[in-house]
Length: 149
Length: 415
Image 1 (spheres, rainbow over the protein chains, first blue to last red):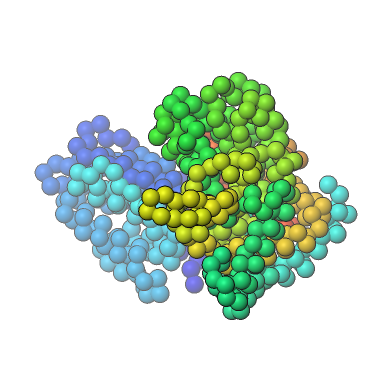
Image 2 (image 1 turned 90 degrees about the vertical axis):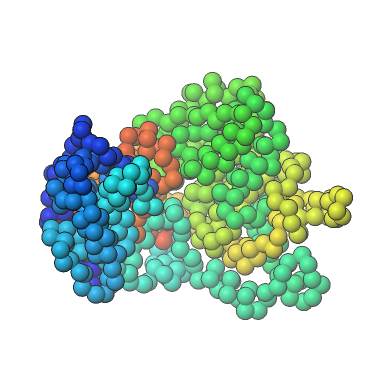
């Protein structure tokens, strides 16, 4: 049975309250805007790619705790990571939050992002968790706008 | 309001008419349904009328000469007659069955306004309109080079009526206004607006989606030219709604959609259209929906409305007080109690409405979170979204208590 604390793990509450990398990057060479029209979550993601590595990443946005904490934890996870690896992490994260809610989540290789394993039991909230990642994907593939609608 | 009046309303008995209210939802918690402004639950009589029609009397209407077709036609037209009485129309022919309020407004925009609209003309709406009472007008205005003007609201969520005279101009061709706001709960002074508009020869279309389930509507007393409402918000089925139009206006309007049922005679050279309302009901209509809506109207008609209104007023003041006690809660839409329906939109410092919605859902409570299809209202108050608890006559003070407890839980969770 889904429990609120499965969704709102302490790390999520904490990152929502004090998001990391909540900043505009003046020297970003990639940018994308993400919208979740369902609940009005908005995010602007700034990425500085050097060679094939994400040298720095920052975000600004407004939205629910899940969307903001997801952006905060994501930026922490992908900073310093090769672009291809960040894309693989996106796939793994996506698979975790959209997986079969009756089976244990596969959190291997996801580190702190495993805090979002409970999201799959709250189908209405999957888009909130995914927004930052879709926006990152859009930024890295030179798309301008991501939407989880 | 007096508790004596509220006491006369037997909530337990009314609740027993709605099967879904007895069920458990999330985590085995009993359902507390506070999303009535989005859609209302169905009494057994509506469910049964629909079932019985399909099981016993189903056939197409206005077509066959056979037994079932006659039965279906009689039932369909009887539903129209009930709807006409319910809205206070002069005749059933002033009632068009539509899919819902949205389609009704689109119909008026397309068939009434579009042929009349010239470049530079204006349509006057209000800040608190639902998107369905904005976008259809906008589409026609864009096509014709006309513009939408807006009667503003104040910080309490009440229309600034003193600005109305200045906004009714020689170019105004239509006024569109909600009878009751879906996100603020404000009850608008429709009659006053109609009088001001009519004094300048301007017709008024009223979005009655929220009003039909809460207040007794009399279109002739309001004086409006069009009135739209949705069956599903009136405890009836989805997919069916009502458009009231004054006979002389409907009679002069071209069809909305072409097809079967709306014609008098068809050749490839020329089609003669049927009279209103058939002219606006192309294709096989939602017959079962109309019959279900007729049953909902019967159900509403049998309620003691003085007691219902007193009960809802009590729920509004009680729930508002319980929510206000919670630190960080701010009510959005603070019209005086006499001008407010039992719809409470609120925000909570530090907790996004979407998170709040998830927390209260875990307690078995259904509320709506978001912009409620009223983004201009959200922009006016500078907020992205609200949490909205919307009550119906089958709700209780206990429902309000459960909501307040769940909101406090969110307060604790998010600090």
